[in-house]
Image 1: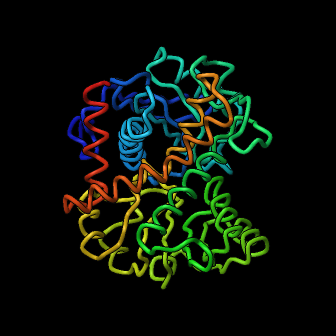
Image 2: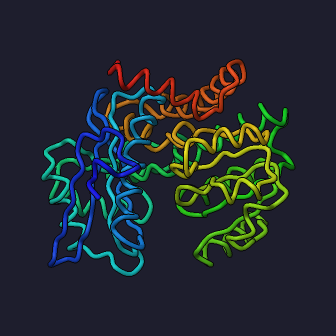
Length: 351
């Protein structure tokens, strides 16, 4: 199948494949749209079952970045990269150097940052070979804490603010005593759990790594459940914080939550699932709106902004979601479709 015929292809401007035999690197970069500015998006390393699965992921992720930056009012386009491999077993310095060469070869069409399976230290290694790496240094953090370039704290804070606004809109409640099922306890999911625990939420968690679950149980009193159980829990909020397509034909039938608000990208397997959630009375926080904190952080760092300005931008994500919810209800549209309309008006017009 040609890339142009791929079901996830959406007028992407550039898709590049790279194989470095010496290091074992197999990677793909996808640039979706650059009308608003250069494409920026994280590099993800994951043990994809095959290259077709990796291509689907990078096409969907890069498209999501176009929408994410537009909704966050950033002068950035949408791009993403993926490395095929297990980050806990296959990653090496030579591989990261080769990835830097790959990114550099695009001449600035794509700027890489951090995503699942990639740490700030990996980005610094890539930066030895490429001048198009972001998120390796930071002057400040939104909360005044030590900054190391990792945007995950900002992403988690933005998701927390969005989840809080979603609960207030749907349940007319604060977070005390609200039950939340978190799928995935990575860099963002774990920090989200910490925010929610401090607010008095009751947590149910699942993850593929037992050590993450043990920490959540010990530090937050979270109830650990299996990956198969997480969807059907009788909770107020379901927070997808792992890979995409968690919301699909099968999982929607199991969901008992009133709100879906999480950090994962491409949470809906297909756009039509937004309609199904609306018909079921479930409020869905469009993923690229609620999880925009990371790219917002990187943008502020590059612009030489301040911690206070970054924090206000992150806290504004809750207001943006509330506005989407109100407009969607007025027009009888699923929240994902209403968000798409706004984002497309911005990045297609290039303003």
